[in-house]
Image (cartoon, rainbow, N blue to C red; front, side, top):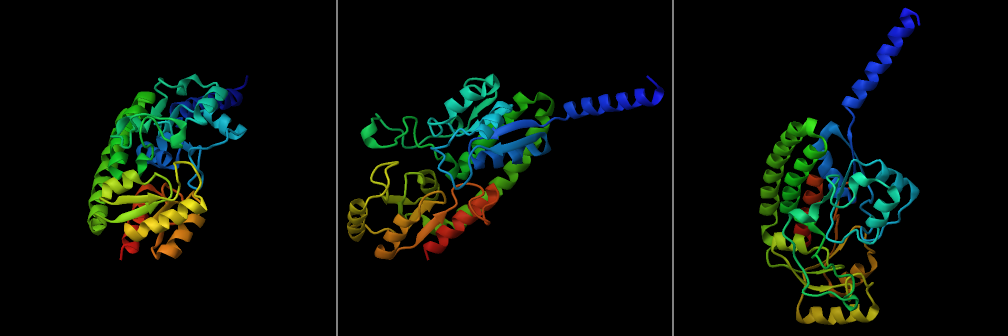
Amino acid sequence: MNKNMFAGVLLAATALLSSAAHAAVNVLACEPEWEALTQELGGDKVQTSSATNALQDPHRVEARPGLIARTRNADLLVCTGLELEIGWLPVLIQQSGNGKIATGQPGHFEAGAFVPRIDVPASVDRSQGDVHALGNPHIQMNPHNIALVATALAKRLGEVDPGNSAYYQGRLKDFQARWNAAMLKWEKQAAGLRGVAVVEHHKNMEYLMNWLGMHQVGTLEPKPGVEPSAAHLGGLLNQLQRTPAKMVLRAAYQDARASQWLSERAKIPAVLVPFTVGADEQSKNLFALFDTTVQRLVEANK
């Protein structure tokens, strides 16, 4: 081997070692909010993707080959848990053959384990519809939950990638400062929403309503996961004459027709809540998600 060839091999080997030393942690999030949070905390030390997008129902996901491949290559899986993904995630993990992200492993992170849960049923049977035995899983709708998950996720990133633990903690500190200031701003803007009655499409706005002091007086679905029927909507319209609501809420992934029907007949605004990051042009990150949500609720309450 001549000197030039040796130098070339040495240079390639050095580049390969350098690349390995700086390889990003490959993170697969189940939902867009956790991908966004991982990006906030991981910076250039992580490579992220989400199994779902903002216009998909996170309860129902098809394990396509591309998603299986991403799952196979993940170092860390970041999901909601609380049975939100129970219909598809166990099969996805099994088909990927990736033991690093199996339940109970450091590479398996469930955000729902780190927040106070609401709507935990005393008992569950199928006649109640899609009721989650571990409580309401839509925890991302309260920014205080995001803060709790951020602390736990930064710690887990440091466990999966100990060489960059201090980096993740530094990113967490910066995020917390910006997030706490934003929460104060949102709560001040939303002060007038306290006590406001709403109708929701599915029982997925409970954490949002708890945070802002709003309350629900009806749902478009007769039971969780059961599509609105004409009979149920007619009964709900009659009910609103006795117990009025100020607005009807739906998430971006839900069909608009039922909320529009009720809005027109009850003469109340239909509010599209982004629900997660990427639902529209105004909700491209976690901060923008809550900026948009609070703004739309306040506008509807005028």
